[in-house]
Image (tube, rainbow, N blue to C red; front, top):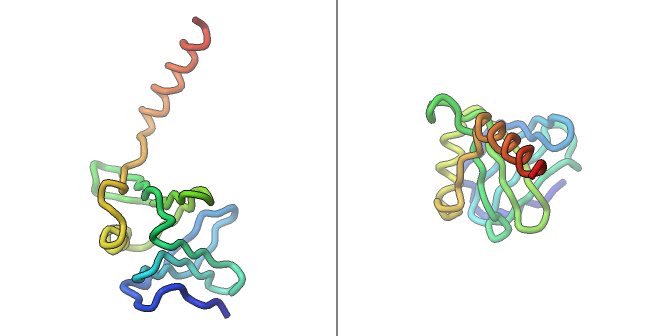
Amino acid sequence: MVQSINTKADLTMDATSFTGLTDYGKIMIGDKGFEFFHARDVRKFIQIPWEEVDQVIVSVMLWGKWIPRYAIKTKRNGTYTFSSKKPKVVLRAIRVYVDPAKMVPSISFFDVIKRAFKSIFKRKK
């Protein structure tokens, strides 16, 4: 059994982790960090202490009405992407422990296309 890093749990919710294959389980937000526990396999878990969080990247669609997923970028181990049933509740719970300036929206589809065209024309010069 996995030992939790949190001493107090603020929020526990069903969630999906997008690391490699899709994993279903529960996320727990507490006083020490963010945790994801797999529903069936106890060896598959993610524990991210709040000191390790660099940014929280939020995918915002329909002018802020719908948040399909969010990602936690760590200082050393990369980016972990999650989705949950009520992402706004999860992000409000994360905002208590992470500086709101570190919570940023992801770039839109049109920004990706614009960057691609800029890089193509930069290479030709």
